[in-house]
Amino acid sequence: MQKSIPCTMMRGGTSKGAYFLKSDLPEKEAERDQVLLSVMGSPDDRQIDGLGGANPLTSKVAIVSKSDEPDVDIDYLFAQVVVDQPVIGYGQNCGNILAGVGQFAIEKGLITARSPTTDVTVLMVNSGDKVVVTVSTPDGEVSYEGDAEIDGVPGTAAPVPLNFIDTAGSLCGALLPTGNVADEIDGIELTCIDNGMPVVVMRAEDFSLSGAETVEQLEVNEDLKTRLESIRLQVGPMMNLGDVTNKTVPKMTLVSAPGSGGVISTRSFIPHRCHSTIGVFAAVTVATACLIPGTPAAQIAGDLSAAGSELLIEHPSGAMTVNIEVEHKDGEIELKRSGFLSTARKLYEGTVFISE
Image (cartoon, one colour):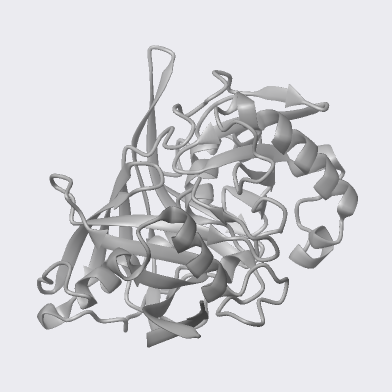
């Protein structure tokens, strides 16, 4: 017997996912997870029997509800549905899918739109952090049309600015969870850092790579993947994440000199597949590392005092602009603000069917 559930499919940033009202899903987490696995067609590397696109970037879910928190409009729980395993990860935020949450909440009647834009304060349930999402709402109606462009997405759309409120250490408890600017594991110098996403930043050249390799080249580099996984499993406890064997964090990011006018170039693993772009929070976290002297990222980026607060982070499909500012005071690193510009588009709205 099949069961139908209201569902909206949206592109958020450079990802795509299914958006649900929390009230339309089972209350018990185990039952909800089974529903989401069925929706996406996991576990199956093709996801042929669900909505997933056989890629981590298209196997994502947003669960949205009206918030009971003061000064917060909506709660947003992100779920990463693993493609080929019966696993759903809640141990991270997703800034890409976040870009569509405000529009979804307005169109579902959770909040009232204003004109010409509506600021939506979102609690990211996965980490407890807050973000203000600005949605284009001329005449009080959500508009997806506009002139904003982001690399990795064809065409243009309405701009969606996102400004984060105190995301440092969101999942690891501290911006630099090991207490060090740099550590060494398996002979590789690295920085463990969390500004909205736990990321391990390493120089590509330390793996005998140029950093300009294509996603396809890195995907078939099994020796590289084995070395990255060895490091990832060791840094998990060091980053206060525990045993990360079956977790989707931390992300493993290789950095190198930029080639297209940015401050740094990246190749990011999420955590076992090479990202065709870079996750939003990963980009923000790498940008933060560029501003902390002594990190592999800062060693490559060099002096950014003249760069202002907008840092261009290169990735395999182009680049992402991150707005960020840190302050060094009494030997401590204080994050003053961070944010970025994204876009989103509603793809369809209706019901999804699952087998009971």
